[in-house]
Each structure stands twice: as structure tokens, then as C-alpha cells.
Length: 252
Image (cartoon, rainbow, N blue to C red):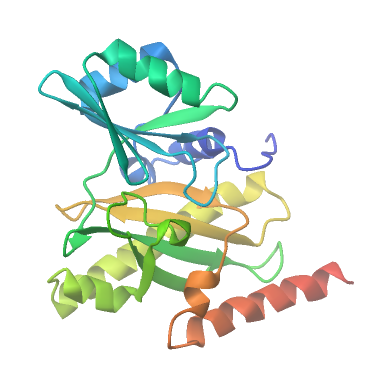
């Protein structure tokens, strides 16, 4: 088994795709190229282009094919191109110095008119310990943004409260939360052997308006500010306890 390094989203997606149980939850993911750009737009009509090793919601481009025009969204800005080629050339110039991947855009469920996704923290106390879900939050996009990241004015809610505001009943909320946790655990267990000393993953999960769930990516060095911002501190205490056990083992 070859080890993985860094934040390579494409390779991590490829490893997870080998697990048949995860395949239904993984968006179609390809490397950035002109051919893949054209094919993904033809198949999905609306796509996302993001850095293969990106973080903090930076340099993410949303492209939509609509009535013969191509709309490109970057943060709160929108550009309109009259041809697929001019849209491609714009993205190519913007992405020239880094590697990017392409995925279909998921029509995320919303609160009001703002997109919502979920972040799940999965940890283990030692490299031989079982993976455990230690925290789950919902992230709501800031006004005018497609990404939900806090660095783009996103806000954080407890997942049950967010789902209630999506008009889900108590039983539906229980089922969805359980599923999100199960999929996140399975993703961590699948990737764990490829990162021998990894003890924490943040799993970013999207849910579309039909209730289907997707794994966007796993982050090996997640920020935890969202958990600190919650009024109820039980999750961040649990996360910190696992982090403390990790430091303790490293000092042995």
C-alpha cells in the first residue's frame, strides 16, 4: 500500500472510490484539463473547479452552462462568457500555477436562500485506536457566497438546529445525522491506512435538495474555530481531549 502525502484531494477521492460502500457518496471527480472541463460541463451543466491541495475555501470557481452562455462565479463576483472556450481560457489563466480538480456542483439544501453543508470531525486517540466521531456542525454560506467556509463569511449552527430549519422532522433529522456520521467514519477508516500517523480528519459533507449525501473532501489539518463558536462547548471539549491524548502519545 502506497502512502499518501499532503492534501491531495484527487488521490484521496480515488482511494475512497475503491471502497464500494463509499462510491454512492463520492461526486464525479477528474483532474483539470480542457477535455475534462468540456466533458464535465456537457454532462453536469454546473461544475466546481477547486485546488487539488486547497484550503479555507480559496480559489474555488463555479461554472454554469445556461442558454448558450457560461457563468463563472468567484466568491461574490460573477462573470459571463459567450463561449465555452472563452470561459476555459479565463479559468486556465487563473489556475495556471496550481493543480486543480473538477466536480459537479451539488444543489445544496438551504436555510432561507443560503447554502448549507456539514463538517464532521473524526478522531482516534492512538494509531491503533478505533475512529470516533467527536464533532458535527452545519455551515451556512454568507450572503452572496456559494462556499460555506468561515473565511468567506460563513456561519456555524448545531446540526440538529440547522436541519430543523430545513423543515425536517425529528425522525428525519435522526436518520440524516446518523447517516452523515456513518459515512464520515467509513471515509476515515478507508483513508486511515494511507496516512499511518493520522489521528484527525475533517469530513466535509453536502446534502442536496433531494436528501442525497455527498463527501466533498477530507481535511487532514482542520480548523476548529466553528466548534469553538458554538454556545454548547461539549463537542470542542471532546475534540480537545482527543488532541491532548495525541500529544501525550507523541511525547512518549
